Length: 115
Picture (cartoon, rainbow, N blue to C red):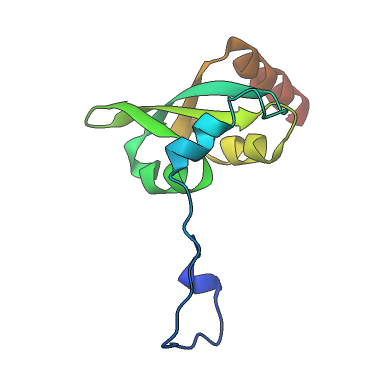
């Protein structure tokens, strides 16, 4: 997936060659098979619908349930990588970490050090 605003000098070509990509669900599922070495953690969030598109872009996962103002969201992230943590924090009070509790505590402890 590419953002058009990040592209320069775009040219239309007649002979387009594209590589098929697996669906997001297939990719996530493959991360949980025995061949995948990196441990993953499941995160559940309550998210503000006003940030829905940004959340879907920067925290790829799946919507479990929606109401008028919020949605319940699940994503899987590599336990030992930290880029997802920065993206999570960037949404501030527009998301609430529901699970795992250890992540809630980590955010709380980190935020005390920032003050």
